[in-house]
Image 1 (tube, protein in one colour):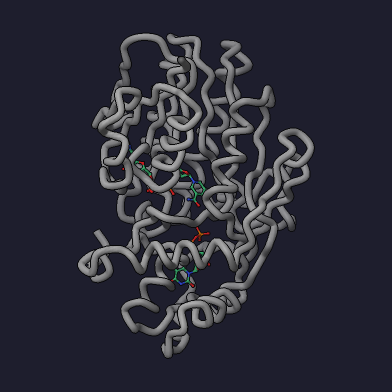
Image 2 (cartoon, rainbow, N blue to C red):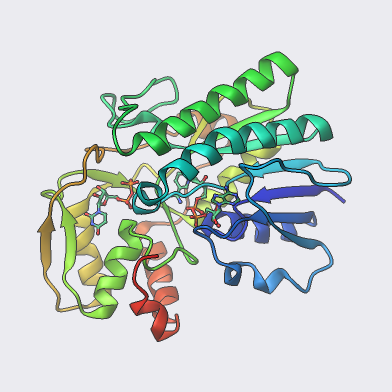
Amino acid sequence: MKKTLITGAAGFLGSHLCDRFIAEGHHVIGMDNLITGDLKNIEHLFHLKRFEFFHHDVSKFVHVPGRMDYILHFASPASPIDYLKIPIETLKVGSLGTLNLLGLARDHKARILVASTSEVYGDPLVHPQNEDYYGNVSPIGPRGVYDEAKRFMESITMAYHRHHGLDTRIVRIFNTYGSRMRLNDGRVVPAFMGQALRGEDLTVFGDGSQTRSFTYIDDQIEGIYRLLMSDYVEPINIGNPDETTILEFAEEIIKLTGTDQKIVFKPLPQDDPLQRQPDISRAKEILNWEPKVHRSVGLKKVYEYFKSLPHDQLWESHR
Ligand code: NAD
Ligand code: UDP
């Protein structure tokens, strides 16, 4: 039986990865310090003999006894309000955390996949973004704590591959949405849906002309799984190229939820990228992967999920 360590296991993507690897028959070790995650996301796995959970901060020394085949490093705050609130922890988990996990992978002769992001492209001057684009990131801007930590993550991962021959994979994840996102994490999908459910106006930042391309969780997990099982070492974009402006997106959510609320405009956060769309030619060619779930279908599913949450979670303010 394959043994797989997933960091960030109690978070949005990490918990769905735990489900997938359990379904694939692996023994899964979830690790998380719960800084932005929630044990509720994985409590359905606690009764399984093939699932273990370690409450641990991966920016500190990481030791896991026994054999290990795969490591997926997904621990990191991922929402702009989270990483602006805990900037040093964000820098540490992308740098020291990654270093610790690469060391662990080396000790165990395990394959390691690290979760990078479309944010390595910053506010991109190339559109759509392909993996050869080096990006346009301000190292000292507020978002730099996340973007530069992830850029360092990619650099040190490639160095371990080249220098130590470590078996590595790098996924560049574009905006992904689905169940188990925190309603109050500030990202645009839970933000707009939470506002619609509470009967509040939808807050569009800037004039809403900035674009994003949203990927449904099931498509994202499939892409990550295929990449891990491939032999491809360079970074691969996993995202849905279906691009929308944030203003159009707000209108879409109003229609979907049937809310009577209006759109209100708020200032655009500093360094908020103006456009983002993945070029997925590489994922198509190497992994034979492309997204299958249309936004209208995925958004309906996640809205049903948010609607089903206990009432107090809807009103929980940001941590
Ligand atoms: P999330 O906040 O839901 O999950 C992150 C998890 O990591 C949380 O459970 C948190 O408690 C844990 N964590 C953070 N720091 C830790 C530390 N030092 N030690 C142990 N655990 C720690 O976020 P998510 O959306 O699931 O993102 C998961 C990963 O995917 C992140 O690395 C993120 O950068 C990457 N990513 C996500 C997206 C997206 O759209 N969701 C896009 C690009 C990249
Ligand atoms: N956004 C918005 N209103 C909100 C939350 C976000 O207009 O209440 C915008 C945000 O400025 C950005 C886009 O939606 O342009 C996506 O934001 P998110 O935080 O989800 O992801 P990221 O900026 O990391 O792509």
